[in-house]
Image 1: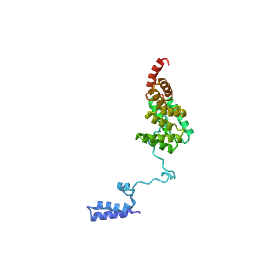
Image 2 (image 1 turned 90 degrees about the vertical axis):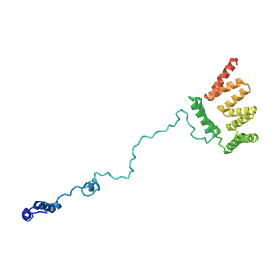
Image 3 (image 1 turned 90 degrees about the horizontal axis):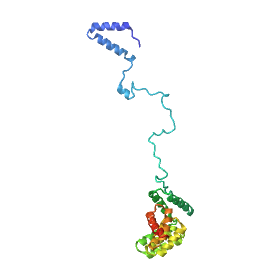
Length: 263
């Protein structure tokens, strides 16, 4: 739009003659009105914040990040701790129960090797607990039930029934060392040392490293006055389980008595 300067000048002089007091301000106002379509709109901060007139210009297509089908990358956080596969004491936990007799033998052989070389009593106790767990695993629900019921009835002083249940267990599983071990403990609790001794020997024939059977044999020899027999079994026990509770002290005491007599 174009305005003729001659027309503006004539309009200004006419306004001064008609309204001398407001001439200048009126002219300025009229000029502002006439020129307003040609001037840029004033910046409004509130509209800018809302994306209205004078607001921020959206980025061009070149500046926008490319679209992708890939999920956004996860935020980086602190590194996760890696759990150790072995315990800090060096003892390896029993990962699973064996499915076959041969697998059970291999696991026991491995655990016995660890027990014999344990660095301290804490590590030895954890390894021994894993071994005892394997001992209790018969692979037969029937045998497990018989031994469990025998322990319950023995605690209730129903000794005849407890002995019958244990007899059935060892008959069903003649190669299950824990069956004979439990029956040996039962006979010992009934002061039937002969029967207990026979079951302990059966346990050791199946598993020469069965340290609980060795402990039981030591107890019977000491109770019957067989110090030499107890001393020899203690030496075998310490080879299998160097940190068997009380074994080293008992061995040292018997050693002085037995070797002091020249036996």
